[in-house]
Amino acid sequence: MTLLGTDLGEVAEFAAQHAYLAGVPLVLGLLISLPLGWLALRRRWLYPPVIAGTGLLYTIPSLALFVLLPGILGTQILDPVNVVVAMTLYTIALLTRTVADGLGSVPDHVRQAATAMGYGPVRRFFAVELPLAVPVVSAGLRVAAVSNVSIVSVAALIGVSQLGLLFTDGFSRSAMGPIVVGVLACVLLAVLFDLLILAVTRVLTPWLRAVRA
Amino acid sequence: MIRLEGVSKEYAAGRPAVDNLTLEAATGEITVLVGPSGCGKTTSLRMINRMIEPTSGRILIDGRDTARVPAATLRRDIGYVIQHAGLFPHRTVLHNVMTVPRLNGWGRARAEARAREVLEMVGLPGDFGRRYPGQLSGGQQQRVGVARALASDPSVILMDEPFSAVDPVAREGLQDDILRLQAELGTTIVLVTHDIDEAIKLGHRVAVLRQGGVLAQFSSPADLLAHPADDFVADFVGRDRGYRALSFQHADVPVHPEEPVRLGQPLGRRSEEWLLAVDDGSRPQGWVVPAEVGEGPVRVEHLHRAGTVAPVDGALRALLDAALSSPSGRGVVVRDGVLAGTVRAQEVLSVIQQAPRPDGASIQGPESASATGQRP
Image (cartoon, rainbow over all chains, first blue to last red; front, side):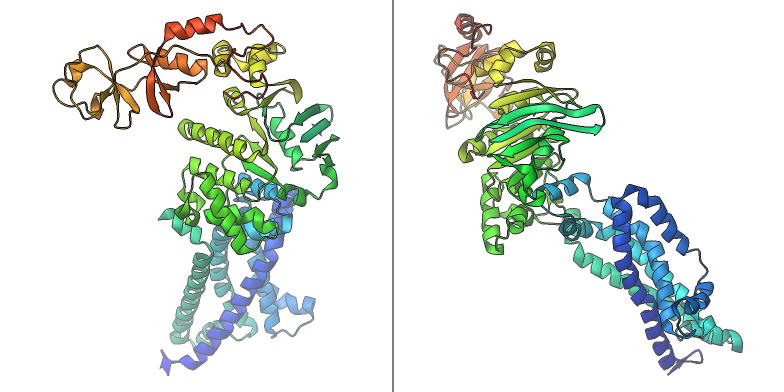
């Protein structure tokens, strides 16, 4: 089956790879941002360097990162691991501040009450602080998801297989069809990521709906 | 018993927040720490459950040095009620109350049964358990906060400005509930407030702290009002202390019979200036003016509600207030909520006049109980 002269089977294959290259770093980036954000909030003097440092990661051009990483990691230039690592860095850049602010949004009296109940720092983090930071973290995650879907396509320039190949293909053949299909597929993928994050957030925050009702 | 021995806390060298505080909070009593902001009262409270570590001195609970107990373990044995309740917004009321029993390793079913029990005790039965804190009023949230502190049946509860963020009506109800629960359970409570009226109402013993965390006076509320240790305490307990001291004085005051009218029924031939209206259970509802009622039955909109109502065996302060606030000049007194008669300001005053003056060893009236621990 084809659309605008583009094989949809191939598009689906690209889309799956695209989702993997954007999605896995989203999860990895979140897992790394959590301790970083927690640390930035707990140790006040660490906040400026950690937030500024992770923020700076986002200013490194993606193409430069894709080209540089194989040298640093000792991987092949076409290895998708390069893309996963690069996208994880971008996710950390976007999420660390969000995580710190999300944890910081937990009211002081709630945190104190948790301590006074006899929660140790680790249990308090998972039982009280993290659940309450979910709405803020989820907002940051939605931005990171869209950003990842968009940036991954640049990896087409170094030949890593995903939806971005439709753009390079369309460009080299001067054909609009693959470019339009590629854009549509990227938008669709970003929307799916967004809906998935919204759904998970909804499940994790029943109290927000109860209070609004 | 909680004993603070020479406890100090310095955040910056040479500027103590709490300075060499020695204090005993007796078992089964409410000890109140009161003072202006910056007097170290909250710091003192938080050193008891080690939310703040003292710079020097030690704190013993039932003879056990708290510094030798792991902080988290210590805290699970001490209830804690905080201003704004500090409930977990993401957990239902029931799960909030189950927190400490669960931390203490109770099974889910046992913790849930206990949570329902304590919620009932604070006046939040059944359905409330399923709600989230954001769905409750400030007063209800604070009730949950109290229930949460009671849940694991601790022998000690710390309360940090528990009612200061609650509206005045809810606050009074909460204070009465705390007095009732404490009397029932015999829990040792240490409560911090900046409100001297709350301190006097709740405390068996009241510790007044001054700026810099120095203990100014530690005595019973009645003694505090009668014998302020110095100008600072005298200033702090305030201008109305002569009147407020009447809260601790009980004496027999002549009760005059009062012929009430019933809500929903006509006045008949009654034509006095003021008549007291009662409901079907003889509970006083308010005063009415016959000219305003006319021929028909007495209705709710005829009521003048200015007068306060005092228990017939109440403190002289309540009796005098009933007489002074009544539009008819007749102060309404009740027994178990049912009309018992009325009292006159003049006669309450003459009883006060005959009672011993506050410059004696005690300001207690002849009818009252022991000088320490007497409740308003």
